[in-house]
Image (cartoon, rainbow, N blue to C red; front, side, top):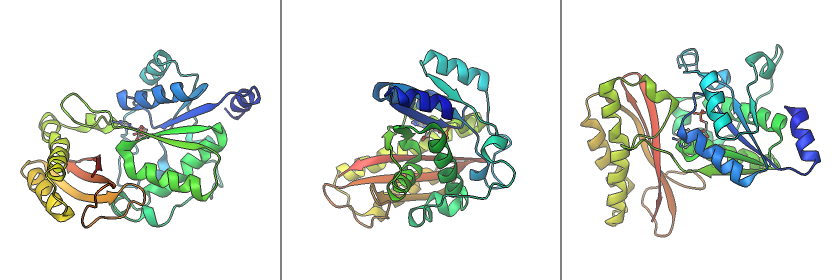
Length: 274
Ligand code: AMP
């Protein structure tokens, strides 16, 4: 992969990287499409990264279907699919990690304490191998995208991070490889996430400024669904990812939700412009 990237860069081609954990869906493919528009060469990596899963999480049962993924990527016109092994990425003796500090402590970081350290480490390794000019991430993982932008800025990495909108099912559920874990009932119940984000959007349009008022209304809606168990709802400003008490006019915020349905933990969010 390093040789292929060097070869392409030597003839002046730009490279776009789409890092994924596979089991691809239309959300991933939307990132591929953006990369193909922006860069000369598109590389998709597929790597279920063990260092971002805690021992109690779903590393072993994370869904995988490399054959189907390759078919989808071929059809999408991707130039290279990079599928390294765990041993190649983390050989014996590996001991170097990349960690972003403050922005990783809250929200997802509170519920998944080692997660972001694993993410920033693998993303740095992938950047070093592929040497992309652009890397594409989904707003679906809004905190992850903000952390990666911070890392790129702080470590003076020479590439541009492009964040792409959330792709949803027709009924509003954000596409996720983990949606297949949901039972029929949980799948129905999970629609409450996008519904409650719509409620929040409406309240803000009607001039509600208090984050607590918005969050309470959303909590009410989510708790009315029997299989839900909420981890958090937070309203944060788009750039710094700091919690907002009251919303100011002309600013952008994310409303973030993490919620379990049965054993499946889902995240969703919406970008609000006040
Ligand atoms: P994953 O394979 O889940 O690690 O995701 C790989 C990339 O795809 C990440 O940048 C995600 O944010 C992005 N992604 C996942 N789901 C969606 C979605 N529904 N819409 C847009 N991007 C997504």
